[in-house]
Length: 128
Image (cartoon, rainbow, N blue to C red):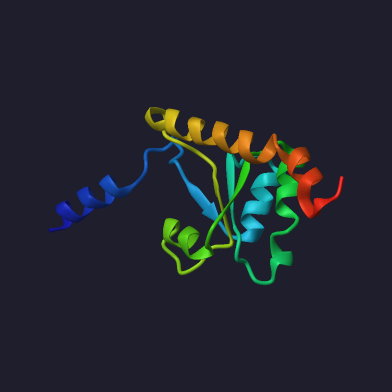
């Protein structure tokens, strides 16, 4: 029995030197990763209450040149990290064989959110 349990314990350990592809969540942790430029993609929920918790995050992402997007529902983000809710999540690493899919997603997010900021800001509110 002990040889089986040690074999199982060794199989569960991640290989040293290799980072797993991870999704991090939580305002403080995501903010720190953005400031260190470790985040590859930031996803923010639209229904955070109070909104002041995340209203500054797109500006920080633009300043640090990190792609961000806003999605419907913090409960959906919570499902990603196996929690009830998550105000924001960020992608910090991807496996080498899966690199293509996140790169397409990041390119799409950059064109729809980051690159269109000035256009959206000028039309918001109906003014010039």
